[in-house]
Image 1: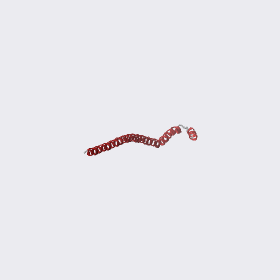
Image 2: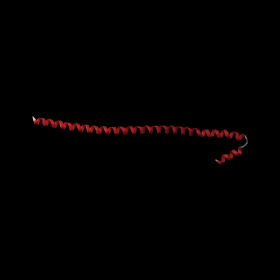
Image 3: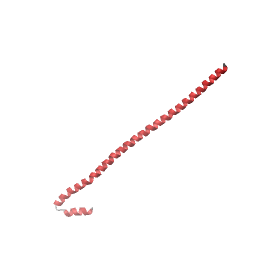
Image 4: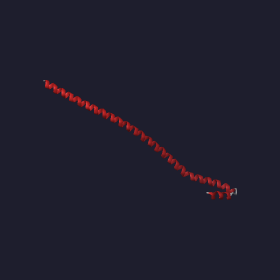
Length: 102
């Protein structure tokens, strides 16, 4: 009977050590998962910031392209509208000098 108790005690002790090892491994995995979650959240924030900057730059580019597209026409129409009064005043020589400087 003593042998039986000792064998049962050894089994209980072995089972206890096994449970301790499982608990230790689970704690280790939990901390690793928390670290990975923290890294994921940080990277997710970084991606959101980059997407926001990309969107702003894209809008800025479109606005600049639109301004550039319409700007030359605006300058040409201003030049034409200013040239007519000069010609009507008889200042064609002044107008030709201005053109030759360009």
